[in-house]
Image (cartoon, rainbow, N blue to C red):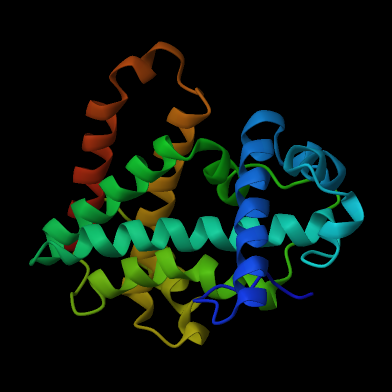
Length: 226
């Protein structure tokens, strides 16, 4: 099948299928946390669920299919957390801070899912864009919505030609290119900071990572709003 279906089941058969799908998702996340994405095994997941491995093929075709389901779920869960946090704020700057903090909070609460979507690629796996793009773009779309009505400030010391070229390279995406270029830069700034904390890339500095991240968020807000 192309993807585990979500939504309210309407009959006994549909409810039973939904229950198995939910168990499969939960078992997949457990194995992801315990063994990592590269070691995810349908046979091991089936053993955990106490069902025959062949029974899982009614729900997912193979290991890669299950990875795709978990990736889509992770992106959607992160985006839902961001949307909820942003909805509680009223100004672009406070909405951005809420966005950034929701990203970090979700990553710290779901480290294995964060690693799956923003960490190293899984050897031998290639995410099918037709199934993952919608969910994967949601966090970026949320960020773009925060800055879509603002004019990005000029940053002293930057090269105008280089900045213009970067903006022009994004014109095909159909958005205001200068704003989009700055938004992508800030997104990478946030993502790099979260990754360095989660993957312990800064050594003892991670003992004070909340303060470090607050500084990164403040810098990001200045880059976006001046």
